[in-house]
Image (cartoon, rainbow, N blue to C red):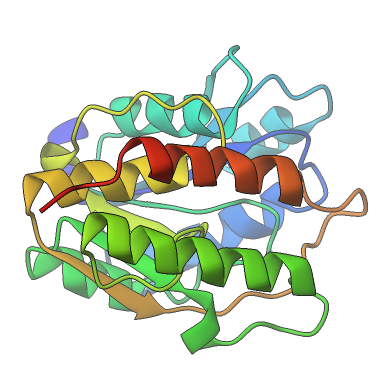
Length: 229
């Protein structure tokens, strides 16, 4: 089975029983509609609800990552993925898992990192706070200067990678989103950006993001890894 998998659709998960099933169904529908040999992989980051149970019942492969953190969950998932290509996104129903073809097309063309851009694709009302919009644009500007990459949404939660091209990744938390761009920039592999939509988080409890805290984590990471060319 492992050798036959072209695409892994990977989702980190922490107490998302309200939305994980919706995302898994969409991901499988995408695979079936486009006749893609793929899998849906859920990395449960120590959920205390029924997220894992729901995922297993719907046919997703589920693995447990006990070490809390966005980066920890994604690093585990990327390591365990069977697919030649991996597209990963949050399972809060804010990203469109039915429309992954533009990401897969670019991966098939040989782009090692395909990054989503929510500002080009469209942000639904209430999906992103003003402070988040300003912060992401500012940090993305700094990131472009620091890493010399043509990306305008450093914190988009929907991305695709060629698994064999993945660099060594270490970040445990939200700064993972910046680290993966930095590490790919060091390799000089092909990077591009795809417009993607963002809609309001479908969970009643709201986002796991902490805008100020997470923003400073990204800022310090950029400061400490500025590429001097």
